[in-house]
Length: 281
Length: 332
Image (tube, rainbow over all chains, first blue to last red; front, top):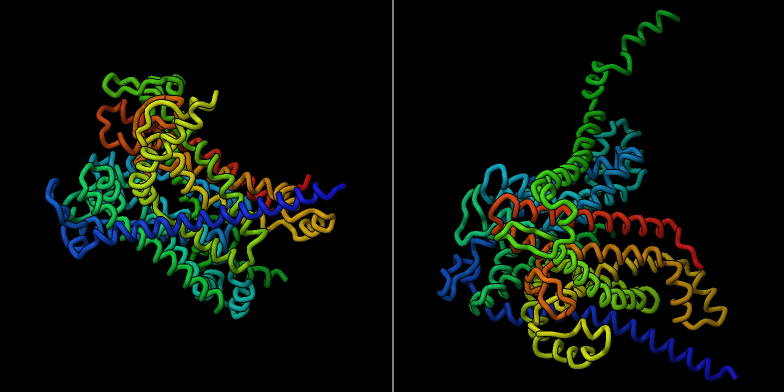
């Protein structure tokens, strides 16, 4: 009597469970598709000139994006200098000093700031660093990226500090160290691997950001010396080259995409590798 | 007794008052506390400043258009007439398309990873999916322009027009000229971008469902799928909702990939194949070209609207996820 019912339930079970497997496989395939397509297209257009030459004027083929690579590095340096210390110290506060309610508010705010769309961060950085001086600058781009680095660093720093066992703190204090000495000489060094990894991941995340740079760092077809001038960056170059109508620019956009994705994925892999090793130790 | 009390008073001065505070700062602990507190409060300040700047700089537009800003369907910089309706529409439509594709896909993958796959395989697939989340959005845009747009123009678009386009009601979504760029293309690219978020958060939540729940269902004779569908998912639904909200917030605020494939036209058109614009893509496209204070102010007001939407969604998502992690998920 119930045998067709059971057969139905069994086949439903089989079909639905297979579908979940297919879905997971499909998502993983997307990653390999992205990697493969970028390698194929980008690899074909990548050459030494890409890393050493400036962009050629419109209409001439060849040239490279040396200025954008240096520009991206400069922007990341600014973001690191301005964003990482703030994130680190605020993270130390949350993990070591914070009271219950105030910490909750800070943590919640950091998460919300982390969720603010990057284009809105761009408008914020524009009003902070471009409007007052009336011109785009590398500094403004750095401010935008730093604002994005802060909440990520705060949360990862707090997490790794909390993972340090309380017995280490108690040991240091029992030997007569004051609280800040305990933090500076025992807790922070113990968590340093994780904290540095978190910082690396934060920088990797903002390295690919385009939207906040469009109207802060803007772009530049030359080097853009110093910190007060508009400056080129890899993500913005990919955007402008991809939407331009020239085939040669499309080729270069692929090459730039490959370089950018390579940098981002390698730093992600590196960070996770360090993390896995420090956890074992 | 009194002599002892006076010596102690000498050595340990009163605990309150500004001089005592400065003395304690010299000790180190309070100083460290104060410095880190300053930076933590800085985050609060920074976020408030963000809201303040958006509010102040959108003043011109807010005072001129008022609430009509949300209903006006015209965006005409030449005549200084600005309405956000087409962009709000575009933002909602692209995000809806993205969720329609990404939620079933993401949820199914999360179920596979938490319920079926052995832990080792599950962990390594999750690792790959986390890498997918790290791919910069401009790269998705690049692939969107050169893969999804041609695919939509030559294959998928005509296919949809000829099949679903003739069905009553929903057919209206797939009619009219097909350029390759448009709401549907943007939605597909967005779906690929937000799927990793849904998977990784849902998987975490599903893994917190107690083992006994599954075992009880299986012991009662449920199949694996029935135990997942009727027991595990209801238990985890608050957290899963949280992951969807998080993905929605990402999709609404996503800029570059959408800007590159949506076609950039300030229009409200029922067809998903027609070009459009979202709030974020409009800001990205027009901000540097904005001449005139009112134009700039209107764009900043768009930014304010986007900020408020994602702010609310993110807040709700966090609350939902925290609720489930505290074991608040109730089986029904």
